Image (cartoon, helix red, strand yellow):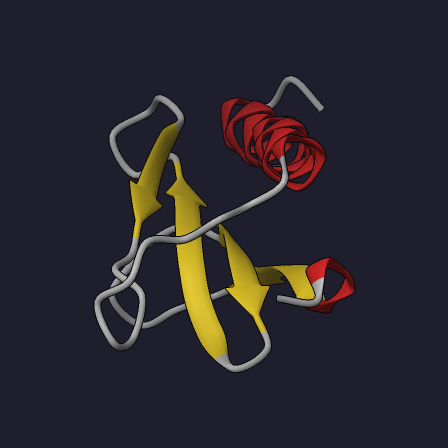
Length: 82
């Protein structure tokens, strides 16, 4: 697994009212972070083929920190705090 192939992106998806942050490995979604219910939630997606994800701790930590920062900013903007 080429760890440099992990990518994070901010997305507006049709099944969510607010922006989400997604973690991708090549063409496969690994996880999604959202604040649909007003607090940060991470959804982990199953891997194609059924095997486990092996994600370096720094990649997962960076994703969680980035998602928290970006999505808390979304909530602050909605509240008028920004």
